[in-house]
Structures are given as C-alpha cells and as structure tokens.
Amino acid sequence: MSFVIVIVCIAGLILLTTRWKVNAFLAFLLVSILAGILLQLPLKQVVGSLQKGIGDTLGSLTIIIVLGAMLGKLVAESGAARQIAGVLMKAFGPRYVQWALMIAGFIIGIPLYYGVGFVLMVPLIFSVIYQYRLPAVYIALPMLAALSVTHGFLPPHPAPVALVGQLKASMGHTLLYGLIVSVPAIIVAGPCFARFVRHVPAKPLDTFKPADIEARLLPGAGISFFTALLPVGLLMLTTALPYWMADSPASVKDTLVFIGDPAVVMLLSLLVAIFTLGKAGGRSIPAVMNLLADSVKDIALILLIIAGAGALKQVLTDSGVSQQIGDALQQWPLHPLVLGWLMAAIIRVCVGSATVAGLTTAGIIAPLMEQTKVDPSLMVLAVGAGSLFFSHVNDAGFWLFKEYFNLSIRNTLKTWSLMETIVSVVGLIGVLLLSLWI
Image (cartoon, rainbow, N blue to C red; front, side, top):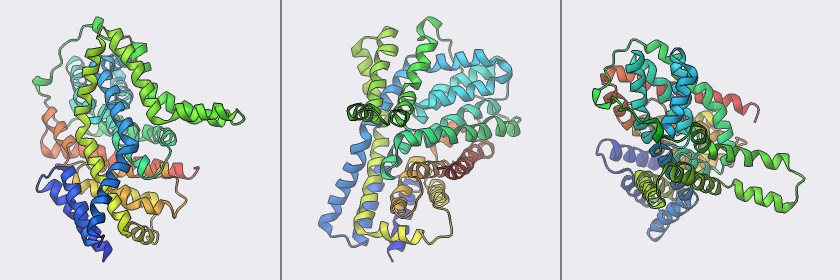
C-alpha cells in the first residue's frame, strides 16, 4: 500500500506542476503534507518533517548555490563570458567554429545557470550565424549541449549540488567524474549529432541580432578564463592534494579540508571575481554589490524548489516508506545506476524540470545507497543524466530554443529534444563505464 501512496503522490506532483501550473514549491508542500497524512505520520509530526527536510536540505546548499549565482552574474555582466567565447572563436577559426562554441559553452556553463547561459550565449551564436552564413541549428546545438551538460552534471549548479548532499557524495569527486563523463556526452550530442540536422530550417529572429560590444569594455582574456574556472580548479586541487600530502601534519590536512570545502571554495572564488571582474572593470563596490543582490533574485525559485523536494524526502524518510522502497528496489533486476537514471528520466518526461526530476529521484533512491556498494558520486551523475532525458513541451528550455530559433514544434523535437536525449543516454553510458574502475 505504501508504494501505491508514493506513486499517487508523485502523480499528483506531476499533475499539479504540468496540468494545473501550480508553483513547484507550493506543489511540493501540498504533496508532502498529503503523503505524510496518507502514510499515517502523526499530524503533529507532519509539519515538523517539512521543516526538518527544508532546513536540512537548504542548510548545506544555500551558501554554495547563492555564491555560485553571484559568481555567474559577475562573469556574465562583466563581459568575461563574451571575452572567453571571442578568444576561442579566434583560436579555432570559421572551419571549427562549432568546436569553439562548444568549448565556450562548457567553460561559461560551469559558473552560469542554464537559463542565464542560454540567454547570454544565444546572441553570440547568432553573430556567428550572420557572419559566416551557417545553418543556425547546426551551429547552436554544440554550445547548448555543453550548457545542458554542465547544468545536469557539474557543481556548483543547484541540482548536482543538492544531489551530492542528499546522496552523501563527495563534491570534489562528483566534479572530477562529471568532467570525465561530460566530454563524450557533449561531443556526441553536439558536433556529431548536429551534422544530421544541418539542414533543418531555422530563421533566428532579428530581435536577437547582437549589438557590437566595445573591446575596451571587456576584461582581459586571461583574467576571464582564470576567474570563470577558479572554482573548478580549487575543487580539483583540494580534492587531489590530500592524496599527495598523506604524510603531512594534521594541521596541514585540516587546513586543506577547510579550504577544500565547497562553500569556502565558492566564497574565495567570488571574492577574487569581485576584484578581477568588478573593481578592475571600473565598477564601484556598491555597484558590484547591487549586481550580486540581483543574482539572488534570479535563483530564489530554484532554492524554493530544492527546499520543497527536501520536505518530500523527509516525509518519505520519517514514514519509513523510503526504507521499504530501498529494500524493494534492491530486488529489481537492474543495476542501481541504471535504476537511478531510469527513475529520473521518467519523472523528467512527466514533469519537465530537470531539477525536480533529480531531487525527487534522490529522495526515493537514497536508502538504496546504504545497501549497495555504488559510489555516491556516480549515482549523482546517473540521476543527473536521467534528469536531462527528452526535454519536450513541458520544459521551459524547449520553448526557449523553439522561439529564439523560430522553429516548428516538430523540428524542435527533432533537434533540441533529441540532443537532450543523447546527452542523457551517453552520460549514463559514461557513468557505467566509469563504475568499472571506481
């Protein structure tokens, strides 16, 4: 009976967010309360579970997500993202322009949230299309595939960070493994797949034709690359150093652990960006602080969705049904990583939101982690890959791509939706291959 209740609750969540367009945070709260009542939690405990779930989830994530948003805002507004893309375009030339855009999307996508990255980089894509007279979809897909992969696989993006917390994974290992898995996923879904849809007709809207930006207003190329990639470098360095310095004094190890904490890494990266992209770019500290405040507004809803998912997870945990599901799933004739991917993929197709799909899956599959030998960081990536599966008409990204490139729904399905599906499947294959050695 418990399984039926969980299925009914997930179906209710899907209906609330898709058919009746209820705000995702509100939908999570309503479904969490319903689940608590149906699963016979004492009424006085239901609200306590909601509060504990929200507090536990946001407690470990808010600093990272907020600081990541602030860093991304500075990278975008300072012109560093455009500078990175421009340098890569010059280095690769017209013949390999797809690869230049793909690498630019990957680098820029690490600190930028997907929606911000999409809106920021589309004008660059259009400038290439107008300058070299190349097919729009053929040029766009590699960069957008890179943005999508960073959104689903790599910290400090909200979903991977939240999954790391829920599945008790290592942030550094997740980033390292995610980088390994990301490369083939982007290449296959980007330049390789784009060759097959080269002739799909698209008429980018003149509205989005970019204006020229004065070169003197952009930060230097070196400082742009350094600042955008600093959190990645610090996380990888502090993950690797303890292995190289195993015989160091305890005080040194403690210092490395402190500096390597994701929250500290993001804080240090942001402080550097404030001076390299803010003050050095001619902005006053108050002006930079206003930018940072605006960035928090951009992610407020994301934080609330993560909080709602935490509430549902806690209700399932406190009722004991999560443990029952974990015990039952262990009997399924599927590899745990495939199971995590499949659950996230099904919820993604139904709900549309990659974040909701990933976090909902994590709440259900978390008990299974204690009963298997699967590396939690690999499970984070498997669930993240599943959460990107087949974006269609219930996903905002689908409509962004359709409208910006002036495509029909059919051609959007043939291009955007298939690209997302390829990213998801290749990502799963990469995780499974990686699991053979980890």
